[in-house]
Length: 437
Image (cartoon, rainbow, N blue to C red):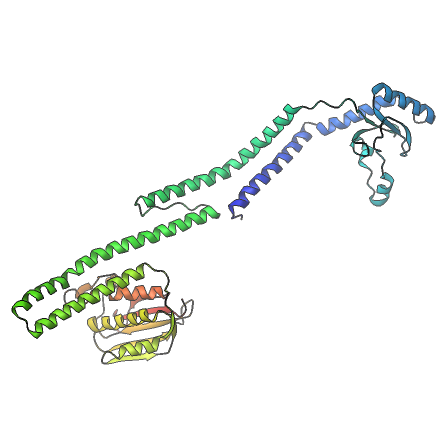
């Protein structure tokens, strides 16, 4: 519910302080402090009533008795009748327990707090109001005998509050630091070369989001490093063949400098150059998430333009505008057509249509041929770099064509896969692209 860490810490402290208040109030009620306080006020009223004349005595007699009591006890004192009239006063002025009580009762029907006795405030400072059994009130203040402060009790109360706050805040603080420690361990493991390092994601606060971001970054780094390792290993292996042919061709060219030897050398150099270009392009695509060059491209027009380079290719479909990298889209179409020409059989067709089944607007590009297709167990492997399948050694190429097709499709929010044609054979490559990425 509360995702922000600062909110959790603030609420922990706030709830802890509220618990202190409720616990203190509960202890006060359970221990009978309020009841004992009222009993003490009642007893004080009974004792004071015994030292004063009754309420029916003359006012002068009540006044003299009240003044005499105040002198003997050395108090600022005032005696009030049950109706709120001041009968006597001695010393400094004390607050009235009946102050504005008539107006309050007339307004909302609630009696003044002082009418029940207890601590009251008013002009001249606070005082104690003690009700007498006959309805009169005595208000007294001891100016010269202030209560001795008890700092030890105050310190004990503060210590108890601090202890309670510490106990309640400890689980939150420890949970936070424990997750940060695990995150630090994960960062150290990743920095030490363990690319599989991950941390547990707990909660929904800022630390949890940081842990999720770390896991995503670590996974991406692992994928890039593994892809580069695989690409380097395969590239070093695949480059040996054209380099060996070029070396042998140079040796034969010295003894037989014919045009055929020259053409073979140029063909091998061109194949090597194409392979290096595809390796660099695939490596660059693996390391970027978004394209920097965007333009609106008519996919059907692009497919027709590329198909014109090959004989007997059928192009059909509807125009679909793709907002993407035109050079990469052209490379995607060209690789699909070259793959069909090398490994398929005529007739070869390419079609473009809007994607009606996708979750968002897109295009579907299909390249099909009449060849035998591929087996189901190779339907995914042919999209891996340097995979040539059963045609290895019989057909030219680097094995990077379909890998580039899938990588370009993914950069345009789509996918690439083999599907079965009308004859049930896997001889159709279906590429889906998002129109806006």
